[in-house]
Image (cartoon, rainbow, N blue to C red; front, side, top):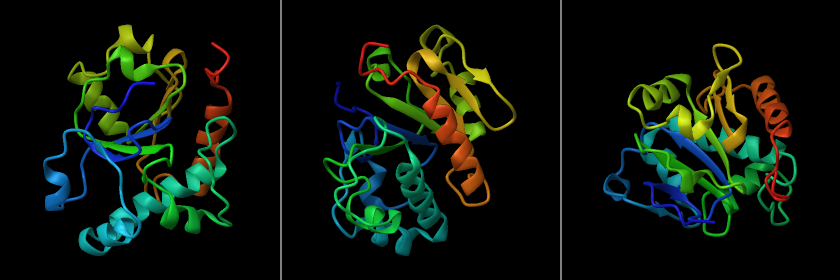
Amino acid sequence: MTLLQQPGLGDAQARLRVYVAKAPPMAEFAGLDACAALLPGQIEQIYRHCGNGWRKVFNVYAKLVWALPAPWQPPLQDVQSWQQWRDRVLLQAGSGTALLFGQQKFAATDCGAEVLHIIAGRQHARDLLAQGLLSESLTGGLVWLDDEFAVARRVRLLVCPYLDYRQLSDIKIARLVQLVRQLPDGLDGS
């Protein structure tokens, strides 16, 4: 698996990669050119500094991880709830998770068989497509299932609503998980 060379937060070898348009507006994240692992307590620091919107992003990300099926679910590391997992593991080194920012070009090396990609936000996905950063030749064609969800099965790429309770509600997390179940897991060469 290739190391992440995109700006973001989390494990540089993450199998679960979630893409959002912008980084938290904090000086320490402004100049990132690669994926940087968070330290314990930094998630709380981010949402205290940047507001409730970022708290929602981390909460929804952790709830998604908690619901994912094997082999896509990162190690839960003996925690008892998604809240504990968020606070103790999410986006830290070895977590298997990354939150990537901005308008980065997807390359063939980013789409290895062992990686699940989720673009959070319909508009973010459309911006990537419009700017040629997510090419049809790479994805094999992104198929829009409705106004909120899209899939490119060949490269294990999904588009879903933004990581917010109102947009990616528990019902929509369940739908996203169902779409993940329909993807080839990539661990057996599929």
